[in-house]
Image (cartoon, rainbow, N blue to C red; front, side, top):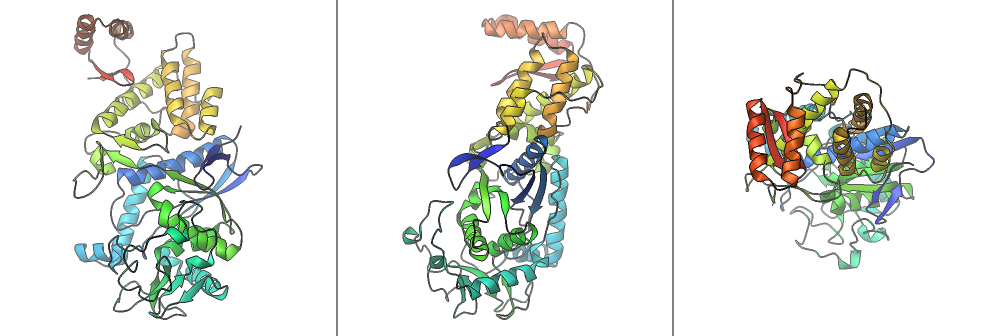
Length: 455
C-alpha cells in the first residue's frame, strides 16, 4: 500500500506517482513580509507529513518550496507590493525585511520539526527564470504585451482553465474593472499580469525585454517548479485559499509552456479558524508560534493538535485544545521513557495504512491512545510502535522533557476514576481527582477522555 491523497482537480483520492520511487514535490512557501501565523503553519505541517509519509513507504522526495520576497501584491486594488509596504512601516530596506522574516520562517519550521526542503528558491533571485518563461508564453501566443507595457497571460488561450477550482472563463465575473489600478492594458478582465511595468516604482525592479519592472505573483511558482523539477511535479501542496486564482493561474502557465499536464496531484489543506473565527488583525486573533511558546507550551503541541484533525477538514483551534495537546504530549514522552530505552521501531499495520489512506492522522493518534491503555501489550512493543508512528508525527516522543515516573498507585487511581466517570459516579470521580492532585497529578477531562499531567 502506497500513499494516496485527495486530488483537488479530479475530486478523487489517488495514489501519488504510481510505480515511481523518486517523487517530485512543490509547496507554495511564505510571502516574507510578516511572521507566519498558525494557519500558514498548518499548510507547512501538511507538506512535511506528506514528505515523511512518502519516505516511510520507501520513496525519495525532491521538495521545492519557494520564498516570495517580491511580486505579491496587496489584496485591495493597489499597486504596492506587500514587502515594500512593510519596509515603509519598519523604515528599513525591503530586502532586509524579506531576509528578516525568511529567517523567522525557517526558525518556526525547525521548532515544528518540519524537515527542510531540498531548495528554497527566492523570487528575487530567479527573475531570469521568469523572464525566460514569459518570453516562451508570448512566442507561443499564450501571453501578450498590453498597451500599458505590462505583460499578461491570455486566459482565453488556455481551454481547460478552471479544472482545479471549477471556475469557467465564461462565468468569471469582472468584479473590479481591473485586478489592480495599473492594469488597464488587458484584453480581457480575467487575464493576469506576468510582468508589470515599473512605472513610478524605484525599488525591487529589474530590467527586462519589456522594460524595467517586476514579476507578477503567479509566474514565480510556475518558473521555479518547472525549472527545478524538470517540468513535472508529482504532488503540489498549498492552502485551500490558493486554489483560486493562484493555483489555477499557475496550472495554466505551466501547462501552456510544457504542453502537458505539469502537475499530477493538487493537494490543499483546509482553513484553520481560531476560537470559531477566521484569524485577522481586525479581530485581534492572529496567533503566532511565538505566542504559544510564550505560554511555556512546547511548539510541538501545536503540531499534535493539528494532526488530531484531518488535513482537508476545516479546523477550529483553541487555547484549550493546544493546552490539552501539550498535556498529552508530555504524558506520552514520559511513558515512552518509562517503557524502556531501545530505539527499535516496530511497524504497526493499522498506523501504516492510516498514513497511506489520505493521511488519516486522527486515526493514527487514536490508535496510539488505545495502545497506551492496552494491558495486553508489553511496554517494549508499545515504545517501538510509538517510535514508529513518530517517524511521521515528529513529536519527539523519545525525548522526555521531564523524566518523572508516576507516583505509586496513581495508575490504579486514574483507572478507577475513568470507571467512575463511565458509571456517572461524579462524586467518586471528583474525590479521586482531588486525591490525585494531592499526589502531584493534575487531571482534566477533554472530549477525547481523561488527560493527566504532573502538577
